[in-house]
Image (cartoon, rainbow, N blue to C red):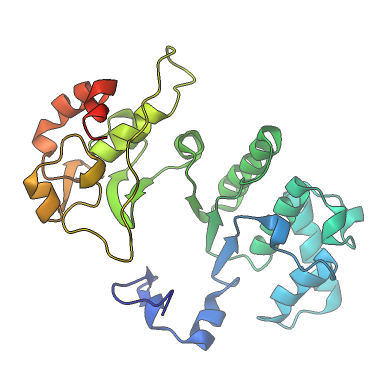
Length: 277
């Protein structure tokens, strides 16, 4: 069935979440692990006040008196920049950016250890995006929360993340610190860097990665990026590459890491990628 976990582990504090039943997962939701979903536009029930919905998350785990719940929600509203006067508003009375901030407040209300932010700025204009990211970074710095930011926006990653994981078709291609974008090793990371403008550098033509990702219902053997990689060999198409350390704390999954200097030079040329199309 769709969404079934067929293998692997999801480890959190040494516990495999994939083996937990619904009761075990509910023990962790909001209390230990909280989610800031992709679209706060649809994240709240339109017929209930936002405060009532945040209280519901509290009631699922604790039996706080009404005054304590109100004080905690007021504290979270202040943290994300929402006025106390909006506590009893309905979702439709909030702008998109305000709803996203209210969703952040809801995620933090039970003081979770891990906060997962899934594309938290999707559907928001650039100015509001910047405000949301500022709030998330402020919360990270002030509360020292572990935050997992999922996004396709490379500038957002490079500006806000301490550790970076580059994934393609469900597999990790490269992992490390900010050096992942400064000195990339995997051809996919090289392709991503060439497809995004460098706002602090010289103007240049952007180079797109040709073709489309593979069908994940029947993934190909070998490296999943091989069909779009200009440097792929028969080995890449047959055998999945292992993760190898290229620098302390920096790993990549490629059979040909010894040729990375050539890859970096050639990946900057549009003709290199045209031979894949």
